Length: 105
Image 1 (cartoon, rainbow, N blue to C red):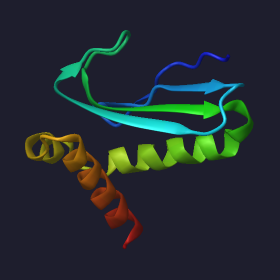
Image 2: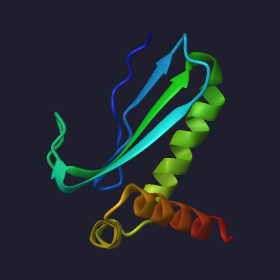
Image 3: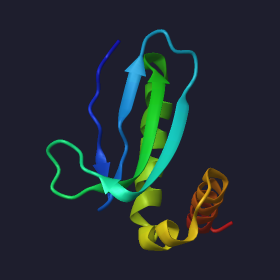
Image 4: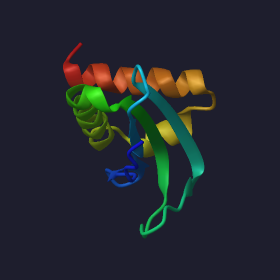
C-alpha cells in the first residue's frame, strides 16, 4: 500500500487520496461539513471533502479524476451549496449540476 497525503483544493475543499495495489476499482466519497474541519498544517478549515481510493495500476484515470474534482471545486459557490443542501442526495445533485454547467450540458 502506498500512502498519499490529502490535497487541499480551492479555498475550502480537500481531496485526500490513497492508491493501493490490491484495489480493483476507483472509489469516491464526498462529505460536507457545515462547521468545517481543520486539517493538520492548514490555516483555514475545509468544508467539502472528496475521498478517492484507487488502484495503483489506474494512474492516468486517478489523475484525471483529481483534475476534474479540482476544476469543479474552483468553479462552484461553496456558500451556496452549504446553505442549500441538507441531505447527501441534495449534495450529489448540486455537484452534478455544477459539473454539467462546466461542461456546457
